[in-house]
Length: 168
Image (tube, rainbow, N blue to C red; front, side, top):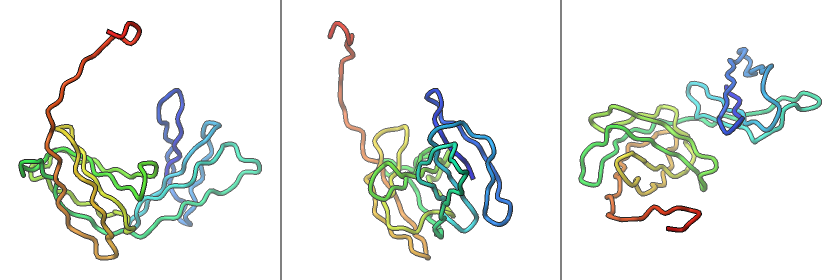
């Protein structure tokens, strides 16, 4: 598991391993608001609500891991060619509780996520080449799914950079 917090504008991580009974003892984290993340084989990643450190008295923060399913598929560009480097994003209804997976050097555009959340949610592909895909709503259930995500075509545009103080 991990504890995450922001310090001086940077995400900080403190990692720990389970003792075997599911508990992960953390003994040194910065004071402030943190989020706990956890993962285990056969389960989708889970996160706690935000909580403050230190807690008085010290308390156990619970992270419930949902069962996982396998999601496979490929990401294609707008012309139907495979995308080699991309990010898959999972979210239920808002970007607030998203999960991400990064893939690089995939000449065929294929991906496999063995620990994808089973919950009904949106899946979205993003890549440096241009606009991301349309979000696809999937319910993986226990069987998982195979999906093709197609990036939207880039749109021509133009803009102008101006001096913020002078406005020109």
